[in-house]
Length: 311
Ligand code: 13P
Ligand code: SF4
Image (cartoon, rainbow, N blue to C red; front, side):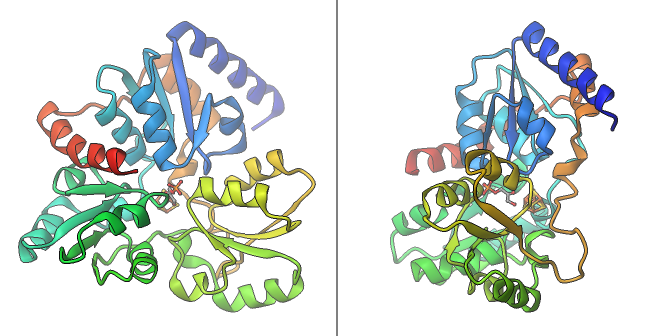
């Protein structure tokens, strides 16, 4: 996009934000220009909390669909709009409500702890929702004699099994971004940058996480690089977060972790469905809008509120 076009969209978005009494929430994986326009940037948990507390008339959610849906579940009286309705998530797509219902029925004695990266229907069929920043705490609070089903991310699930010592049954889902980091190529990058710390999101495969000096949610990674005395980091998550890392620590060096194909598949194609143009259009037309059946909303709200109370 040309600089003039970019400036046009930026100005119009700021004007519309005031006219609509809107708040713009953005995830760290959004494009830099969207992050720079946002009122709040955060990880899934922080954005859910911001959405719940929002008093603006319109919540403009710059993230993927399940995040905007969670905002609507938590704050139904606000209008929630999203730049692209096609901004999905491979984890949410891997877990269809009917299959998940069957999974639960096959294990009636298990409690279902479900990662927030899922649809409202799957949330409604779960007992407790979690995010990567509170999952460990939530699992540790479940009585040890209670068996657990963890869905839909098997990599986060495996990581949590190791951290908590709980033998959970895992749904077979994964993130198309985080599963592509290459262990083999990482060894070369680590060798080249021997002074760097490896930091990773727990959606990465366990063979990759073995090399991480620190593992955490997007916000936890951002906090770590600020507090660590190290000057260089190899970052194994979607590179959108590096924009904030450079803003808060411009003197430090951030190297993107390598991918298996030498491709740019560390960029989340779903998150990147949102851009300045469709952000402007969604605010101008108040569409696409997240709509939800009230009965479903109330059922999905319950496990999210349980999460918020436990974290
Ligand atoms: P965070 O909650 O850590 O921001 O993760 C969201 C996500 O989709 C990671 O791929
Ligand atoms: Fe979903 Fe992975 Fe994209 Fe996160 S990075 S939104 S888990 S596809």
